[in-house]
Image (cartoon, rainbow, N blue to C red; front, side, top):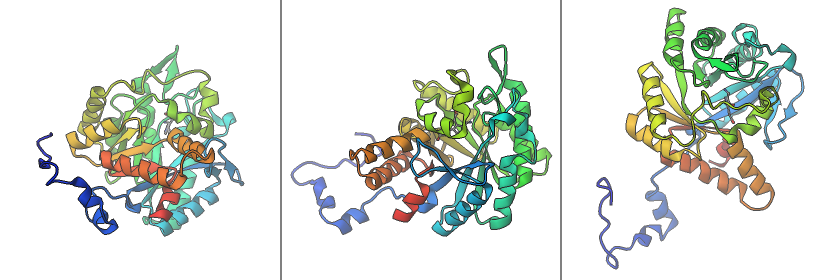
Amino acid sequence: MPSDIAFPGRFPSTRLRRNRRHAWLRALVTETRLSVDNLIWPLFVHDLPEAAAVPAMPGVSRLSIEGVVAAAAEAVSLGIPAIALFPVIDPSLKTDDGRLAVDPDNLVCRCVRAIRQAHGNALGLICDVALDPYTSHGHDGLLRDGEILNDETVAVLRQQAVVLADAGCQVVAPSDMMDGRVGAIRDALDQHGHDGVAILSYAAKFASAFYGPFRSAVGSAANLGGGDKKTYQMNPANGDESLREVALDIAEGADMVMVKPAMTALDVIHRVKAGFGMPTFAYQVSGEYAMIHAAAAAGMLDLEAAMLESLLSIRRAGADAVLTYFAPTAARCL
Ligand code: PBG
């Protein structure tokens, strides 16, 4: 029995089922709550006038900028505090060095400006800092002779973060897993008058099979070919190492830390929250979403119940907020 749990006594004087006997009593003794305040909605934006469905993610589409502005209005009306934006870049614009990432007129910057114009500061805007939407090889960093270059990539990420902050993004989220990028981005933001822009670090991001649908949605799967990201994303076998990643990112100035994926790393979420007491976010990634949908479509699970239980479990593990493609659906249920 862990020392922080009161010893429950003995049967038959102690009967734990007593507290489960009535709905009102179950409500009173509920430990973890899921609220719309805990949800962040990831959205895909492309540079086309019409929305295009993402085949592996039922209910998710790549949206035009106008479509994202409308979704942002929906988020505001549902009470969802923030959205996370992911650009789908035309393959003809991708380059080896992903230089479009630092262009202030790129798709995501235009989208950020449009949202800020429509919604001011009423809605949080979180943007990924990573090169994978922009590189012809699909990697998050610069590639030379088969190697992902760390420090050279970080130099570009600094510029990317500043360009996003200039456009009006209030939270930048480095998702690339290069070493030292949080400190470098903090420094660049401060130098450019953005000391109020927060950093949500994808601190413990595992090299996961569950990103598959996302990569097909943004087109990086094709660019990556058979390649993987194991030289920068973490080995799913390693829990202690994830704590070192988080510790470093906090030391470098992360305002919030993220664990990703969520359901395969609930232990990591728990250790991070318990160990650091930081605002801790979790990303219920595309594969987790697809898996629940597929099982529901096959009649194997109840979609709404499985969705809410999955989100609640991520909260119980210790996540303050969850990035989830279920955000609008869950918000309607709550
Ligand atoms: C890329 C990035 C990825 C996701 C968010 N940002 C994919 C990857 O690392 O290959 C995955 C999100 C998801 O699967 O829902 N920097």
